[in-house]
Structures are given as structure tokens and as C-alpha cells.
Length: 140
Image (cartoon, rainbow, N blue to C red):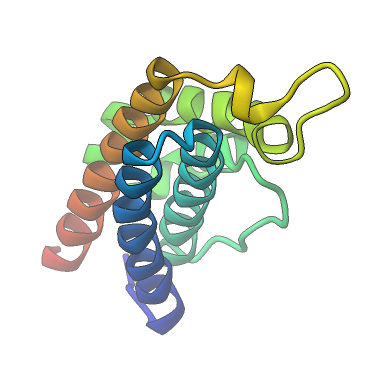
């Protein structure tokens, strides 16, 4: 694994976004928590792909790409890959609704504290796993 400047920037941006999740939650902006959690997870998983030399696809859920390149991933990521893929897929599905909503779906009314807490928990798991993987990869 190689942490180049762009990969490092993704990690830095993800850490800042994680702090923002707590701000949004404290201000009852639950749909924003969900949207930002999705972006945070996307950045982190794309950082992993970059660090193992895989071209990063221009899509929001890179779970399949991680699976196809499983043999390149550090052990800590392989151990949690199924969980990371589920988180990425679930948040990807919420991406547009949490931001734009729809005629029959007002994001500020539909998302609740429970949704925000789940998004924060999932984002934190991905953040810690990726941080551990990048550290593991650099120690090798």
C-alpha cells in the first residue's frame, strides 16, 4: 500500500467530514448526516483503491471494485470487506434522497436521529478500518 498525496488528502477530508457529522447531528440536520456520511465512506474506500494501485472508478459505490481486488487489500480490510460493502451500498442508495428529496420525500422531515446515529456509526467503522489498513500497509 502506498499513501500518496491524493490518498492522504482523501483521508484528511474524511476526518473533517466525520467531525461535521457530529455538528449536523447536534443541529438535528439528520439528512445532512446521512449525505455527508456517504461522501466520507466514498472518499475512504477510494483512498484504499488508490493506495493499492487500482484505478478508482467514477461511481459512488466502489464495493464491487474492492471485491474484485480483494487479493491486494490488507488483512484488516479483507476481514471487514463484506460489512464495508454493505455500508457503502446502503449509503449510496440514500445519497440523492438525503440531499434532494422528492415530491413525496422531504429530507428534513423523513430522516430521524436513529438514521443519523446509524450513519455516524457506519462512517466511524469505515474510518477506523481504513486508518488501520493504511497503517498496516505502511508498516509492511
